[in-house]
Length: 288
Image 1 (cartoon, rainbow, N blue to C red):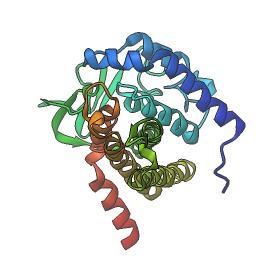
Image 2: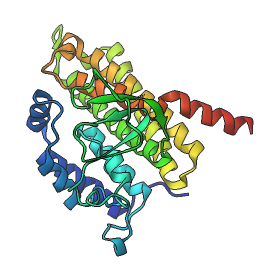
Image 3: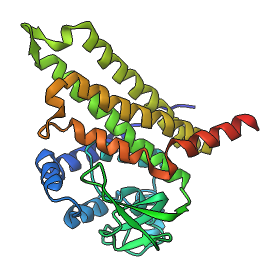
Image 4: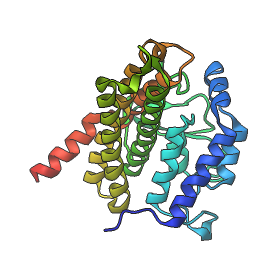
C-alpha cells in the first residue's frame, strides 16, 4: 500500500489549517476558554460551509465525496487547533440528522459512559436519561455521565485518534520552539541533553502514531483502528506532559497553552471507554 499523501490531500490539509488559523486562532481560543460551555455557531456554520461535516457524504447527497483518509487529515488539524465542540458526533451524523452536514445543527452523542456538549447541542443521539454533569478537566469540553453506556462507532474512534495525533504534533512543535528560544545559563535549554531527549521522544511517539492512524484510515480494520487509538492517546497525553516539562514552571501557568492540550488529551482518551475497549478488541483479535 502507498501511504504518501496525494497533492489533493496536502492541499486539503493546508486549506483546513488556514481556515482554522483564520477563524480559531490563539485569541479565539482564549476567548472560548474565558466563556466555557458556549459554541461559536458562526464558526460551526463556517465549518459546515467548508465541508468539514459533509466530507464523507456522496456528492449526490450534497457532500464532498471523500473518504476516511481525508477525514483523518481534517480532524488532525482540528485537534492541532484545539477546536471545541462535538465535532466527531456531528460529522458522523451528517448523513442522518438534518442540518448536521451544513453546520446548522450541532449533534452530540453518547460515547461510552460520557456525553460531550449535552447542553450545547441541538440533537443528542443515544439514551441520556439520568445524565449527571461532571466537572471536566478541559474548560472547552463540558461533560455528562450516563448510567447506560453507548456504542462507540469505529470511525468515531479513529477520528478521535486523529484529533489526538493533531495534539501530539502540536505539543512537539511547542516544545521544540521553546527549547530553541528559552535560555538558561547563557544558552538555549535545547542545548541540554535531557531536553533534547524529551523532544526526540515527543517526535518519535507522534510519528509512530501518525503511521498507525493513517494506515488504519486506509484499511478501516477495527483492530488497526484500536491499535492506532492506543498509540495516538499515548502520543497526545505523554507528549503534552513532556512538553509541559520542557516548558518548566512556565508551562504550569494559565497563560501558556500547554495545559489546554494536556487537559483535552486526557478528556479525549476517555471516549468510548478509554484504552480498555481498544485493548480488549486487540486481545480478542490476537486470541482468535
